[in-house]
Amino acid sequence: MKDTLDYLFAGNTLTKEEACSVFTRMGKGEFSESEMAALLTVFRMRSIKGEELAGFRQALLNLCVPVDLSEYNTIDVVGTGGDGKNTFNISTLSCFVLAGAGYKVAKHGNYGLSSVSGASNMFEYFGYNFSNDTGKLKKEIEETGICFMHAPLFHPAMKYVGPVRKALKVRTIFNMMGPLINPSFPKNQLLGVSDLEIMDLYNQVYAESGQKYIIVHSLDGYDEISLTGDTRYVSNKTEDNLTPADFGFPVANPEELSGGKSVEDAAEIFRNVLEGKSTPTQQNVVIANAAMGIRCISPEKSLADCIAEAGESLKSGKALGVLKKLMSLNK
Image 1: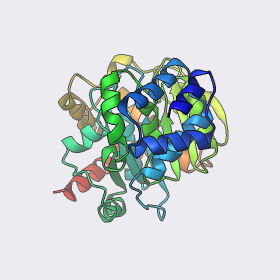
Image 2 (image 1 turned 60 degrees about the horizontal axis):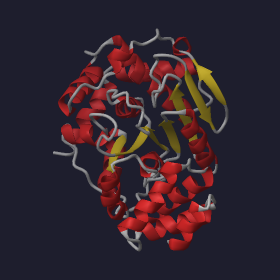
Image 3 (image 1 turned 180 degrees about the vertical axis):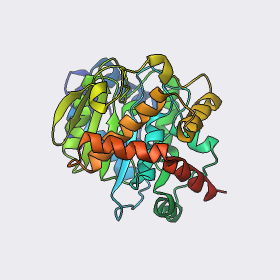
């Protein structure tokens, strides 16, 4: 580690292989907390490079508890967080809409960091039992179209880094890793990011992954399609901007995207969206993000057709039915 730190402190960057090696050793507990803190500090002082991020990702995937869902054409929908907007659980709701529309969702997530409620908070609130048992996850995805992987159960390597992150009390490169390390290796990924620099980084990483992907960023700062303004997106096929009108929706009021002040507030919004009791804006935002997920899986479909599919899943109650069925399997 001393040689690596000296090398980095001199202004050098790591190759993908070097980054993978140092993170692998970190994930095996070979370094002291002080050494790990020093390494993480490097990437607070300068931006991480695409090769470095790809190497760190590879190390954590090599060390994870893998889940073989390769027989399904799965998708994950996730935001990086860090946008400071405290929105309701748009990505997680979009996953239920996708499952309701007949797609297979392998959702990976954790408790909320930059918002009141993360994906794990919602699944736990409604009665989901976290597990890394492949049989359980396969049964859920076959019977309901969705399963959930609570990140700490699949990434034991993170236990060595956890105390360091807690002690530093600042965002580190690990805040960027969550969306990249789904242990089931989904074939499709819809990823929301909080700024254009991170979008470019993730695009470099995903371009080499072999996955279908779409990365989205609302230009007023949201790590999802917010409909509060224009959205920039990049995929393995194209990149462009989309306006709320392109989705067929009016411009959204940012206040209607709030996730509230507690997990209970967030859960009430979550339930209201699925039950058709939410505001039109809340429904529209979920439909827009789910539609982009459909577009990721089936890029040959028009955006209008994807919007229609997602809207039918939500408004017909199919997405709500997925939640009810999934939780009945967890009793």
